[in-house]
Image (cartoon, rainbow, N blue to C red; front, top):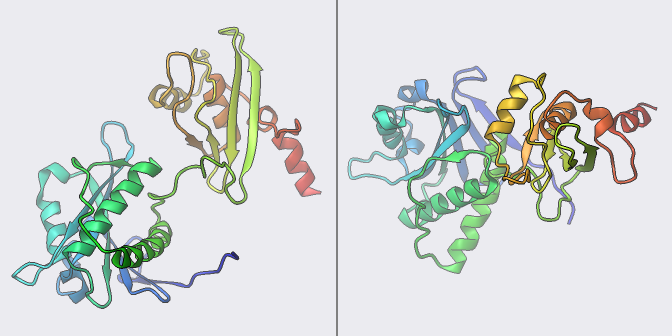
Length: 294
C-alpha cells in the first residue's frame, strides 16, 4: 500500500509558535489543542473545550529530568463544563505541579460519550507505556470499558489520526524508538560496533539503528561497564541511568543525537562514532558519508 500525504491545519491562536495551537486534520472529525499551562484561562468560553475529551499533561521530572506525562479524560458535567474545567483543576492540584503544557483531543461534532473517552484513555495510556518514550504518571491503568466491535473500529481510526497530530505537535509519545521486532523502519540503517576493551578485557559488541531522530543503541548490546577517566559527563550520566544488567547487557533502546555519543555510551569513553559504527559489510559511517557526497 502506498503512503499518502496528510494535510494538517495548525492555527496559532495567539499569533506565536509557543502559544496556544489548534490543530485539525483533513477528513477527521477530531480537534486537538496544545495549551501552555500559563494560557489555560484564555481558553474559557470555548464551546469545544466544554465537551468531553482526553487530555495529556506533559512535563519534566525534577528528580531525573525525564519527560513525563499524565493521561486523563473528562466528561461533560451537569454545569455544562467539560475538559477545560478538568485542566483547571489539575492546575490547582499541588500534586500535579510538574506539567507545563496540555494536549487535548475532542471532536468538532461533540460525539464523545463516556464509553468513547474511557476507551481512548485506556488505549492512549497503553500505547504510551509500550512506546517507553515518557514516564507515564497514571497511578492505575485506565479501563477500556465495554464497546462494540463497530465502535472499536471507529475509535481506532480516530487514534490513527491522533497519533499523527500528536507527533506534529512535538510529542512522539506513541512512537517506539525502533520498529521492533523487525528492525526495518523506513529509512533506518543498522550498524554494528565491535571492539576489545582494554579496561575489562571483554569484546564489546553493540548494535545501533540510525533513524530520522539520531542513533539508537539497541537493547541486547554488550556495554562496557567500566568508565574511562575522561568520559564526557553527559555520557557518564546516561550510562548510570540506563537499564544495564550485571553482565553488561543493555535492557532498553537508548537514543543519541550523534554517532560518537552513541559509541561513547557503549565504550565508556571518548570515541569517534563515524569510524566505530559499521554496516554489515564493514563500511564505516565516514565512508558512507563520503560516498553520498560524491
